[in-house]
Amino acid sequence: MKHLIIFLILILTFSSCKSSKRAKTKNSYSTKIITKKNGDYVPIESTSTKSENPDNTRVDFTNTKAANIIEFAKQFEGVRYKWGGTTAAGMDCSGLIYESFRVHEVYLPRISRDMAKRGKKISLKNVNKGDLLFFKTSNRRNSINHVGLIISIRNNNIEFIHATSGNGVMISWLNEEYWLKAFKEARRIL
Image 1 (cartoon, one colour):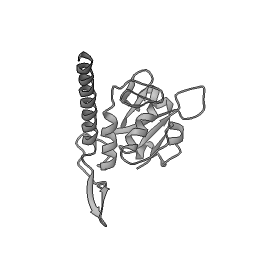
Image 2 (tube, helix red, strand yellow; image 1 turned 60 degrees about the horizontal axis):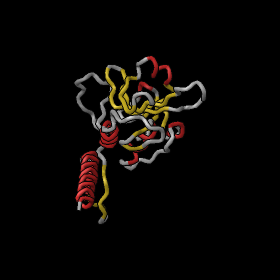
Image 3 (tube, one colour; image 1 turned 90 degrees about the horizontal axis):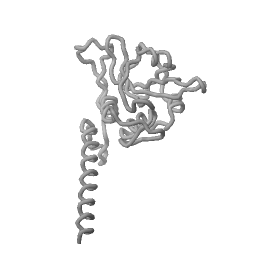
Image 4 (cartoon, one colour; image 1 turned 90 degrees about the vertical axis):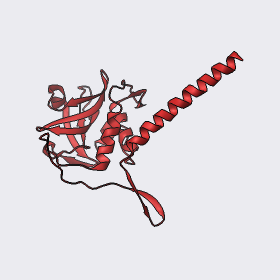
């Protein structure tokens, strides 16, 4: 009888955790518009529009897909670093980007150096929220090995979310000396 009670408590615990995780994920999709087209329901994203610029940002940009990807990525802020990780139990930089785009039906390679071959290369003066920043943080290899997602641009300073081995998923500014020195290129995927 004692084992049965423990078993039931475990089942209730795990099922409640799973449902709360699912509910959180559903909320990240709440701004997606669904419309019926030729008898099938298909997602439609709103287009970019001009908006007021109260915080002196360079970007007049409200792309729904980019906003959804950013909000999804921000859910993982504070998650510990895990090489090869793609879940809330642990993430690496490319895992964060890969998952954030994947759940919004944008499929990228899993590795940052391969991600850097996708999309369109753009200058820093033309970046928007949702664009990717690529870095070379190691002197041992001469290739891109780090990626971050732009989440805001204020006073010509770019804020991005990424995962570092020392701090896990975090938000940084490109004008920080370390990141500015390691920066290699920006790319637009959306």
